[in-house]
Amino acid sequence: MLKRLSFFTVLMGSVMFFQAMGCGGSNSSPVPVVSMTLTVDVSGAGTGTVTSNAGGISCTNTGGTCSADYTLSSPVTLTATPDAGYVFHAWIGSTCTGTVAANCNLAVTADTTIQASFTPIIFSSNRSLDGLDNGAATTVQNIWLVKTDGTGLTALTQSVTPSVVSYWPEWSPDGTQIIFSSNRNLDASNNGVLST
Image 1 (cartoon, rainbow, N blue to C red):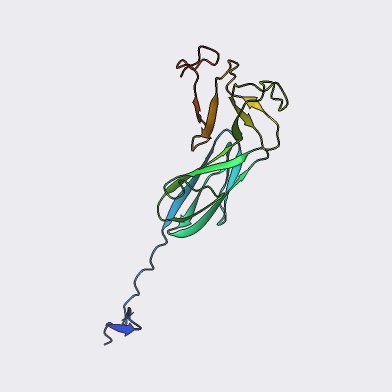
Image 2 (tube, one colour; image 1 turned 45 degrees about the horizontal axis):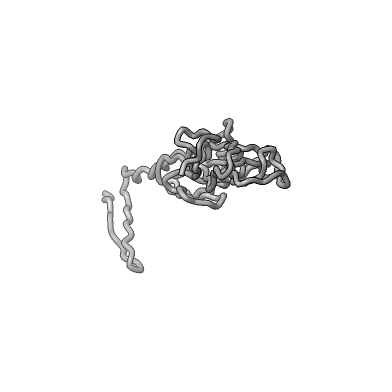
């Protein structure tokens, strides 16, 4: 009668376990493959697409394929590609927060959601409100938006009172809000009595 035989072998500092089964025995069940879901959300005042080098994801602001399952701990690179006129702004998520490059490298160790944002360019300028560079520049400074190709120039603040300035604009991480410094009135009116 054959008996089950189990033994250990030590090789190069590693312990390896072998198991031989006798008649009527069966090998142990194979280890199941564990998959985790990676979900992408695209946001911002601009538009673009996020894709995965491992396939399965091609996500835009309006939809597409925005989630896929990957084997546990699989390395994945997400790439953010802005549409014409916009720039990639930021990654938001536990593994990508603060990344400024358009590629996000991560290992899918749990169900994960990553957000990517796209925006137009934001800046401050003392150009006249008609947008002309050679217009009658004043001491007023406003916040402007523009696409990368120079189209869509828009004054977000429209101050005309001398010495009222708005400056240092920045997008929120999700690309949907703008924060900036200004000496406007506390009621946010552009043309009232200058606050100090």
